[in-house]
Amino acid sequence: MSSQKPITAYPSEELKAQDQEGGPGLDSKLAPAANFTQLEFWTDDGKPYLQEYEGRGLLKEKAALITGGDSGIGRAVALLMAKEGADITFVYLPEEEEDAQWTKSQIEKAGRRANLLALDLKEEANCQKTVESHLKAFGKLSVLVNNSAMQEICDDLRDIDLSVVEKTYRTNILSMFALTKYALPHMKRGSSIVNSTSVAAYMGNPQLVDYSSTKGAIATFTRALAQQQAKHGIRVNAVAPGIIWTPLQPATKGAPKEAMKGLGVGQEPLNRPGMPVEVATAYVFLASPYGSYFTGEVLHSNGGIEMQG
Image: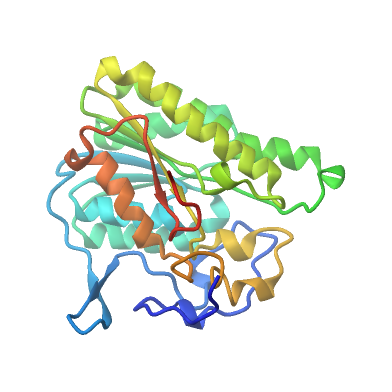
């Protein structure tokens, strides 16, 4: 793969070595900051520039529930959906309060209401509480985005901590089952579910065997649930991000901080990591009328790292 520096208006060349291990990761500590609401445009002479996302009312008067919506991809999804007219509930861990408050301010800046829930979704009771709080705040549940996830590096399965495997499964897929179970009775024809899987579900990752397997489970969960819920008019799809500049990267236990500096460069055809906004547009598409004939699908937002046949 070419090591030539990427040409982009996003700050991919300025990524710095950094480490947020020991915590869930905060967008406020990323250097440089990620981009959540600006799209890349190009002049006729091939020069890139950024322009703020403009909503078109695609989710006007809808109410979206997003897990992991305080930062990273979830934050970008929350902000773009707010710009499209949706009120937003988002769930985050208590230690992510700083990121959550910034996200709240931006949702309100877009003219929509924000309902914040600091809850650990590994607990089933909190999944039920999340749905109840959302309905109390907005009275309807139009879009469910199952996005929260964690990962820890382990180079050899002989050394894997099975308690970490259980934690990864409870965070990434079991909470998705629980939240969806409690959400579905309140979703109507025209509602949609969008799940976050990963390029790792398709390529695998030798350092993230447990994480990769949860993401594979999510892809299959999406296809099976889509078939089950089609008769109710509820569409179920997923997005499979590749290497995206989010706090999950420097917060990954076992990841060397130096790896953050060259993240994505030389690893895929576009030769850079993606920004959260570049993935979030796929979630908006799938949740909106634009995606009305999509169900059981996975959209691959990975810069070409894993080409689909």
